[in-house]
Image (tube, rainbow, N blue to C red; front, side, top):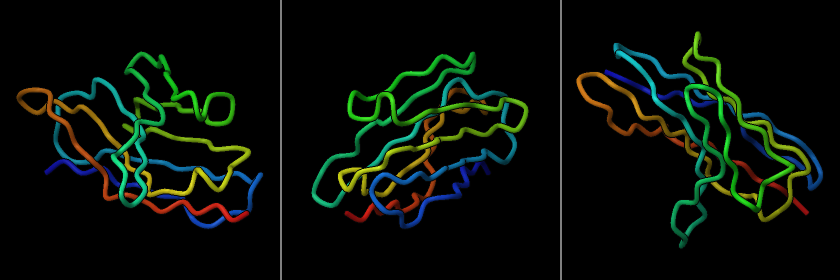
Length: 118
């Protein structure tokens, strides 16, 4: 049973910072890439940042220069450092990973709430 377990998140004032982490656990062969998405009620899920196994990051325009994604392959963990948070960053943040047991398949974390007050 593969699981993505997220931690971090919470309530912060505008301009503040938060850190998220997501660890993959269970029995699997490999992880090809990991990402963070976010979703607000009534809207589709939006990819915030993505990182390859090799460590190459990619960001949504809305978070460039404020968010940093990183990966620790030894710990099967992806991190998201979020700085200068704004009210529009308020959402449920989901961890995503492509994980191989027999084939590569998508896995999602349970989601963690990030709330930024004005």
